Length: 322
Image (spheres, rainbow, N blue to C red):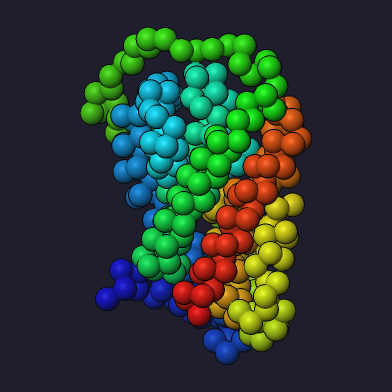
């Protein structure tokens, strides 16, 4: 039985009984979609972020830096990418920690693995994909995202492009012994509650906007319209989705509901997930911030490597799932 069946009943009751919307109308489909997805997503976020933040309480930022600094470059890339799963930053908010890694002596390629992984494959993305598409799609997305972040970091590390980072970034080297205060179990629970509340406060508007756009598409866009221009048979659909996604700026909470609506309208899974990856992992605001700490050439290298990885992943999704 679907564990969210009571949510569906609530959504139906609110849409048809309380709001008294005609079940056969386009509005009914949009409103029902919006209510159901909103309640389901917030339940998932509240429960899972709480438990993930308990885990995060054992890994404060300074300790993460030390761990990465002492790993060899390949292990460091994998570790940094895995840490991205439990650090739900958007592409811009991940940059301060990215800079902290560099100043702590973490190899540049490892820091880029984190910069790619953190916005793309954090627990928010996992929760939303799990709730909307099931565990198979969520697992494939997480694995492909990890591969992109690990390989991107390894490639950039091998290119030896440290000279393209602005010199001031290296001026404050924070290597050395650091004392980490331990938290009691009560403090960890309090931390988790506060952290969960802070995350929900930051993403709730993105979620509502994303679900709202998705609900509009779900209810009002003809089923064959999007499939005609971005269906699985269009070879250019994946790179076009990536190019469209880069100028946009959102986190997983805002874009995944839109992805769900697009797939329902016939857009292939690989194309929509490539769009999602480009929105979360690559964005113009991110590039503008990075421009202050690195040369344009390095930004283009970073965007090019990650962009190609995203497109290959999109094509692979389309090949496997269609």
